[in-house]
Image 1 (cartoon, rainbow over the protein chains, first blue to last red):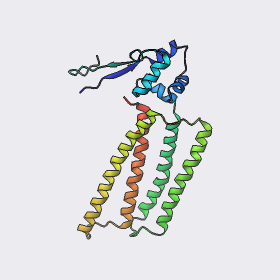
Image 2: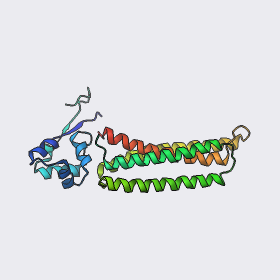
Image 3: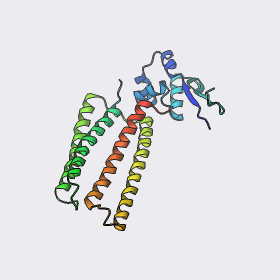
Image 4: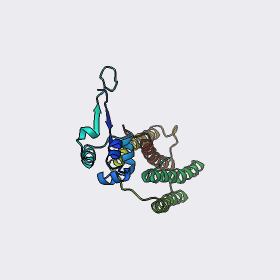
Length: 79
Length: 147
């Protein structure tokens, strides 16, 4: 099975949401600022619970905050 | 470079372990001809353990004063789990090696000169290497990220 990729719009949502700082978001969702940085840089995919908390903070559906890009099983390319 | 509290904490522990046990194992190499693990060698090991504890306490007090301590979150715990997995693999491999060594010694005592001193220090060595592996794995995942 080829691994897909989880992308997110957290950075965009943060700026649209009254320019919330990474520290403010981190405190609201119960993680460290370093973890928010890692999520925004696509270096870490959060747990489902944290993903839901992020979506709830911005008042958007989960799919608007996070998108799953399935990889093509043949080529391994992310669709 | 933005270095988190956890990374600074791990880096400090890594340097403390490397420096203190590095010094200890260099002194062990000088005493390789010993047979039993007694006397001054035990004292040296006790001093090394106390030194690690003191250095860690002082370092973490300074670190807590200098930068705000952050509680571990899910990413820290996940990275720690991966680090323990690698450390466990190394420690288990080391344990098997030491067991094989002891069995071979008993099978052919004339050919393989493995003293109690070497055996104890070999076990200690793999424990320290496993610890170092844990710290290095953590630093690697903090820098590279978990994808």
